[in-house]
Image 1: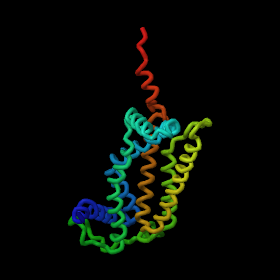
Image 2: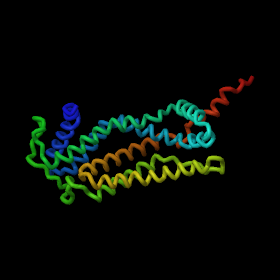
Image 3: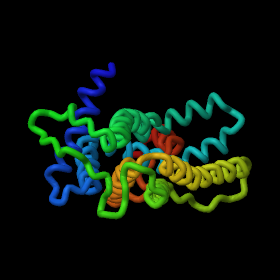
Image 4: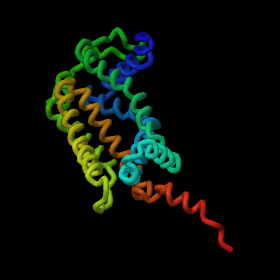
Length: 259
């Protein structure tokens, strides 16, 4: 398994990084990492696109899901059935956003290992015959930042990008009227809001422990994902505009035809 991982992921990514470093005028490792990130993002574009669409679809359904949870809060089995109907009617798979992210995870591990060892140990024995040996890799980018060690500045930027990405996918809910279960909905909304701030903080903490090269990779990936999300949101209808109400659909289906 390790041999397969190295052959399919680690070695190609390492060789591509060194190739870009050799090719770029000035041999700036930061520019090489940015170009590497863009190339990997293009390769994974179908997966990330599917994941973003699935997340946006789930967010658009969230107000209707909250209604069902309030209406059927004491009927767990009925709630599960109605939610499955809602997912089916709107052609949404609640797990479809997870698989693409899991498939991208090995790439993140490979990039991490490249930046952790490739920039410092200079494993040039892994280079393909057509990739020139640079002799050494200068880990200082733009003349000011060592990408082989952690950077608090890049960690904060990564956290900020995570926050923007999360907020973009949040669906604004219409004002609620006082009803049974409103406290539960407010509690859930507060939990979601807390996660919006919690995850960026986690990103910052983790970013301060990782090589700055990996944090830079994460920032560029996040920026490209935000651009994808903006395009998707702009292209699609406003939130909830295309949501199918299962109850209304069933009532319409049972109406007698008029003459």
